[in-house]
Length: 322
View (tube, rainbow, N blue to C red):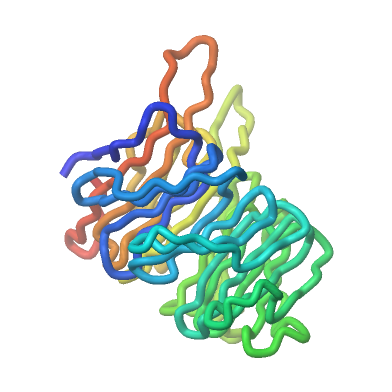
């Protein structure tokens, strides 16, 4: 199947995050225009459109019928797609950068520009957090790996046990020279993949023995200009749910699928016109959603922000996108 786009309104704002539902091909898209939209990725159509006064900076599913979103006003909100109801489940003192939900523990986790990582109990629906961690800088990205939550702060990755937040279980020695922009974990690999603002990706295993043997870093998104590196930030990463591959997207519209075990590039997708803001695999890894945000330049025709669906197939042990 060729690349196809969702029916995104031409007036829709730049996407901040795309997320597939836990078991279906419903796709959640949060946007800077204060819109939270639910699409049917199979049909390419819009199912639900929720509006807010604040920009949505991240989102995640609770289950097939409800989702959480965090905003530039510091609020954490829950949306029920069946009833249409919405309510505030938490607050930060500054804009929220990232949100995750653990179906294992029933906890919502948020990271903010107020330098705090907070946990909320989704069952009690109490706006007071069940746990708060104060860090030394803004939380850029968070990801869940079983009972652990990993938080990217500047060049560091902190590992916390969600059952006991008194101190981090570990501070991973992430081999990145510049600030981490995105982070994604894999429970199957017991590892995380982090991308930095200078185009470097690091894969690190959480087990100390494995970490010494198989952790690595590489420059994945450099452009050459006049014999010099033009370093392009890695904006987003998504780990395949069924095999040892992951995909990265950058600021110049480049999206690449990597073999984590063989440490090599598998496929480079045709370039997108805009910056790749977010990528996400669906539950079985057969679809890949890509949010491309276009920023007008004087020498280009005006384009609108779009969300694309790529079809992923396993072929002779390798992933093929197209």
